[in-house]
Length: 286
Image (cartoon, rainbow, N blue to C red; front, side, top):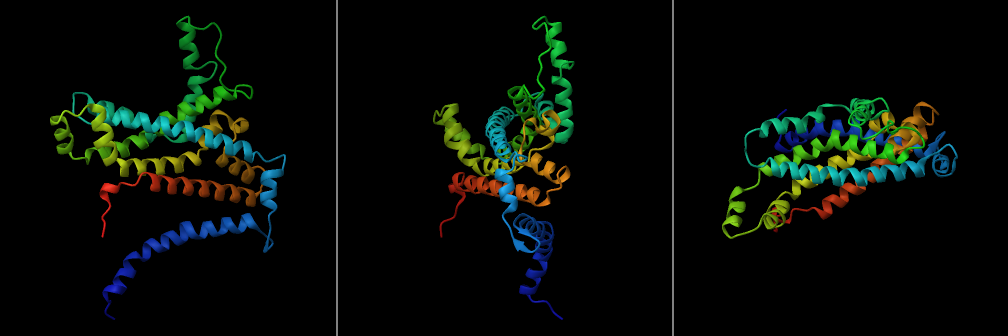
């Protein structure tokens, strides 16, 4: 049997559809069923548990997840953009700095949490250094239920150190694709550094910035390992509560509902990024 171009096209995209069906559509349908159905009938029991049970920390987890995301992503984006602009031009030692910035990308979130826990604990490197320099007399306590603000700060520092490299790699790659002719032409006409940044570099960097923000936001709402290592349930987050409900309380439906909420929030932010960071100079008008 001879394949027509139409059949070949369907054959070529079939692996992608199979992958999406098996790894996305099927788990999503199972999560919806576990969340809203009980013994084959529609049920809102999991929702009532989530918002009304004294065992549930949904409201607190939602607030902390948004707080961490709102703090970490702007800091990471600003730092990544500054470092990418600094490394845009070649100079001696640039490759060494580039490797140093990317190194945390190879470290898992659990390993990063353990590293910073050992640094910030009462007997850790930071306290020993400050005591040896005579800056403090007693170790600074960071971890414990009574030090939530300090633990939150530790989580932010760890997350920025660990995952800023993701944003940096995307923005740095995007910078390499920019036309230097436009920047040089702006310099000829006397444009300042800020004018070149706001009128040329940032508008042309929108596709890379959009991709970086979408990917980083998806990871931010799934934050778990760093928080679990540094704070446990003292600072609950959505992914951590899903893990706790599933493994400790055996509430599969509640855990699935947490997963759907994380997915819905991530999709909402992705839509916002796509709408607000559209690169209109790349759009073709027919």
